View 1 (cartoon, rainbow, N blue to C red):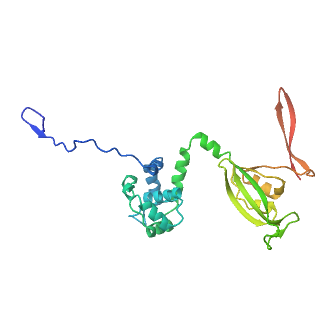
View 2: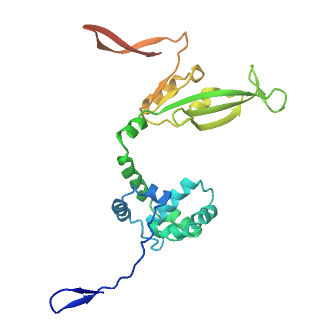
Amino acid sequence: MLGRIGANRSFRVVETQKEPSMRYTDSIFGSLLKPIDRRRFQAAVERHDGDAYDKSFKSWDHLVALIFAQFSHADSLRGLEVAFNANAHRHYHLNVGRLFRATLSDANARRPVGVFAQTFAVLAEMADRQTRREGAEMVRLIDASPVPLDKMCKWATWNGRIRGMKMHVVYDPKADVPRCVEITPATVNDVEIGRQVSIDAGTTYVFDKGYYHFGWWKKINDAKAFFVTRTKVNTRFRVTRRRYVRKSSATASGSSTMPR
């Protein structure tokens, strides 16, 4: 067909499409990558010189592969390579190519981790207020359960109550999953395993009197974390400081105490 510019001039218009185009639908994995700001990610790459060693397998390809590995629960480079390349026809929309395990292995060893650490920090800033509040109110339950074996296993030890093992668990009640599980002989004291738990600042740890250890409690306090437990009846307290609190319209004197 012809189009006109002026009285004596015209141009040809070629119609190349007569049928409606197929609408592209983003994949679920592609949708999960959308919160990552590509410009800020590229700034992190340039800051840490992330693409200095490998121009063909860039930091973005690396990040996408790592995220895919996390979501797909890949337990080996070979398994990750097979699973990732199974949908190679969608790689164009992710702006990545095929994955080769040898290339990924080299990138894992050579690419600066600062690229990914800065990306995580950016995503953490995007978390809404509710998410940040929940993250600051983490609770961990610590407990141990006996596993009686009686005479089933001759190697099982006797702790005065049972012959068997103990299962020590650090439990996340919000996610409803254990964060750490350790199996020991029945003779191992609960607090021995509790003292090995990694302490995270801002987290509240809840445990019973089996974890009665002032040194460990001090470690939790020094790490800017909190704990809830029960004290023994013979625990002695001493005043460490005093403070005044307002009760109704009157001012009452209160004190803070700690075990001796």
